[in-house]
Length: 409
Image 1: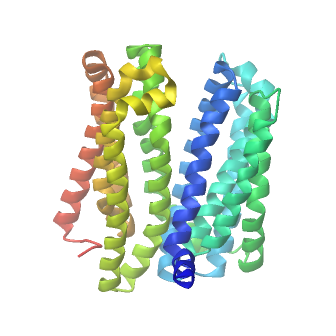
Image 2: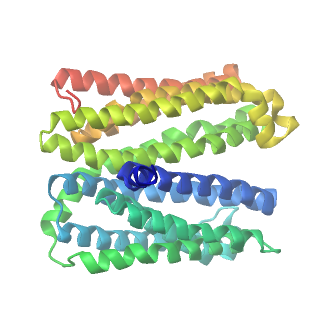
């Protein structure tokens, strides 16, 4: 019995699940810990920094990580690993330079940038680099190393918890330092196992060719995902916006799970597809479907117990907003349904279609946000997000059917 349990826990899928528990739980708890430790103003500024950092992560994923995931599935080489490692450092240096220039912008937040500039740059750089290492190591099946990296990051909790005079600058620096320390095992692995060269013309061309649509899609996706949230405060007021942000933070855990599922299953699916292993693909789809079904059951639980759940998260003052959890639950059921189609688009390298799907979504947001928010309030905001997802799924399915291509056939 013990031997069988040991074998189960050593399986790659079990290790990925364990790592995801650590990673998702860490991000979830860290958000609420900072909300309690920081004052409202500082936590709002931290959320803004994090939102911009997510955009930088998306850009790095589009240009560096996602093309590498497909390339590694076709034919992994030490040179390609060395190239993406070098590319990530160059990209982070560019990000840092752009953030450095931000303090010269004539905006009201200039004092905030001046006072915390180094902390912001350190936070963003360390966050993007650690995210890059996690995804690359997952792509090449170094799951135990990723688990070790995420375990190291747990050090952030005692450091923040026992800091009596925590402010925004200190919190950013603490997270940056812990992220940097957690990245060291990944850096050591890449330096030891990668082949570094300045002659990377073919790899550079591949990443530019494949990444251009992914980059455009990433930027449009960021605006599409955050647009309703950005304008909701103007239309709905502070209380409604607070409820929406609280629910979004809670469901952010599922977002992280879905992202990691994509990071793990995308290269696996691509590898089996290009090796034409149909039975293995069916087995992988079945495994992924079981995971999605488990998430679906969890989301249904959120839907049923929405009022006590939001009261637990935010207190009695949020009890009237239990319906927001119901609405967002419907949104995530639609997102779960779309995942096999999303993976097909990515594996088949239909990057232009990926970008076009998000363009359609963003255009709908621009055309509909005034009507939906003015007349539907929070119902309209979440309805807009649901329609965005449906439009993308329908477009991608029509495209795949028209071209008569599929990963899962």
